[in-house]
Length: 350
Ligand code: 2RA
Image (tube, rainbow, N blue to C red):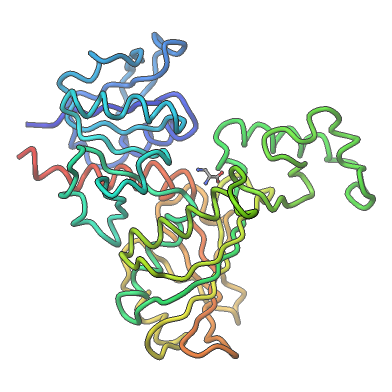
């Protein structure tokens, strides 16, 4: 039988990409329920070329659901995920509420697909978008060379903050356009944007970069920086992996990038890394510096793969590589990874 699928949070930025992803992948699902807050109930949204009426989230709406994709704020997921699981659905949750729970597998199909089977709570977590852009490349390199440590600097798109992120970036770009010389004197962009200068990102994003993604945590780290560290350790099963990361928002609409310095247990060089990465699932090597070819978020946006380039043998650090990765934060970074996890469950319904 074809399993029943639910998309919870169907009306958000990721929910909309989720509907597109399911619509263009193999049609393996039976009924698909679109679920959102009571505010959005009754809207008609399209999936698989059909209009479906959005249902309000409730306990009963999960009856008969086999697999449920959740994309809700952390605290809302924390409440509803156990309810859906208790009603019998296998939940694939994109929030931060369950990722580090030892009884919840954190799955990236290119790295640890077998982990979907061990889910005592009936819940599987989907990693954060920044981690997800990195893992397909990193997992392949780790399998071959044994990852020991990494330092990461991220360049994260506005849509990491959902629809509000898109809206704020485009509004700010509109406001600053046609003002030559703007962004050259302290405070000039803030004055132009007025009361709304710090909306969404904590500082203007147009003509700027903002070294703060997520909320503040102990000792000056942000939640995003800790996610990169903790999630990578869990997915790759390297509990003592040494990680240092700095997460930065940049005026890009869609596509998270990262500059990575990684150290391995065994000797590695750029050529050997390129060979391994050429066969890595979900990875495209774009690394032809002589012809000016390297990954950028504008080229990655709207595509399923993750991209790696600028691969260099570190000059001063043994067993180390430097490289640049890019992935669409709404596709591999959210909806696509979740859809791939769901497809790993299909044999259970045969
Ligand atoms: C961001 N990673 O880019 C976050 C969203 N989950 O803001």
